[in-house]
Length: 620
Image (cartoon, rainbow, N blue to C red; front, side):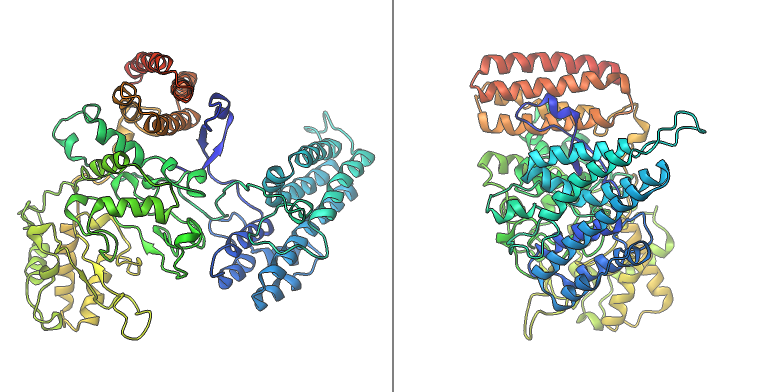
């Protein structure tokens, strides 16, 4: 699943919100700094260093080279001292007030420039800048004060229209209309003055850009969940290859309804709570095709791409451990062999671990026994990548290089620095390079004197050539650096040649014959494989006759949204209406079930299957 925005496809959905994947529109530095301030200010504890950086440096992935303070100094007469002072004092309430007034004042400056402009092009540029700054308030105004949001929207349209146009090569020019610009600007100014330029703001338990007149009135407002500027939860490219045990044996997933349902759950934000559900985060967001999404990043949640703090304040404040302990996302390949589960091996069963992820880490509702059964059934099908250089018993084959074979001998050699054990003592080759135990190798600083919290589950070495960086916190960038770390910290006294050979061995064991998905070789216009989505839906053949309302609705809500998302991004424009039609049919199934009309639900499902078969024949 991807970061999502509600699209025109939502009109298909009735009570179900269909969505289209979309990258974040770039933020102006001032607006980005403000939204990051709200985001960081709602974490506990507040990461003040990150807030300071949000104002002084460009946000991650920004299109502007300057941070907010520098841009204001260059383009504005406003002072940033109040914001800087609040950050230095670590005063959350003062910072909110100072940042809100600063941003509202910047909007006012741009409105002044628009009205004072001598040409339509200059006026339009200033209006555009003002609108982009107002964007940091806009969605919260829409949620809390929809009538005002409508009036402000009309005022922005009027302002843009009144700014005129320079035309094309002088033709079609439209002059500025000062009176209309001032009138439209006054509507916006008055609202900013009443809500974002007040001398005092009520203390807010949760920082937001909700207008002060609404916040002071005590009206509860549901603020839409959004990701802060700099976030990236899109799939990595190329996608890792997914190896499923049943698929390699030639078994059709449609004949495995529990596995198919678990596959759907793995790709469904619906099983999580807020904000994960609304922003489109699913299990597959972090674990692309059973592996690692090395681009996943959320400010304040990830210390680097491919990492996430799942027990912080962002996803589930109830589960917040108040520690900045973002961890490298682990691969799920070969999951049935890699227990116990969790980085420190705290969960003996995958079922228990999966429930913890859903309920505690991401704040979802308690899953049903069937949901856990289905999810575990699917996860247990994840297999390791085929590798012609390693036998099933973990020995190198003749395909591996001479250097790798020399490294294999070093890997199996007892060393004094390892208490006369070898690397293979923990990474047992014949046991998928695992020992099922947790060890403290000294890679983590203890939280306090005598703490034993530095023990981590032994990771497999299979497939690791594609899962950099390494260690629990992703501290080491390459397998060579892992070898260097062990040599230096454990006094292994390896020669340069031995380090090189041991690295070659790790690279051989961690390699794969075909590590990435071959979607580029398939004649498909879809973001996800079309047959994957229809396979998800195939479990309705089991759920509808059983009159299983809860699990049917979870499926229809998830797959309808996925189909609409594919339709919104597919390259085959002519087929788009047909995919939207399929999504509509699944919505119809869900609506019929909600109305307890199972006959209608089965009729819509029959139509869906017939239409899907026609489309599949044409696409493939």
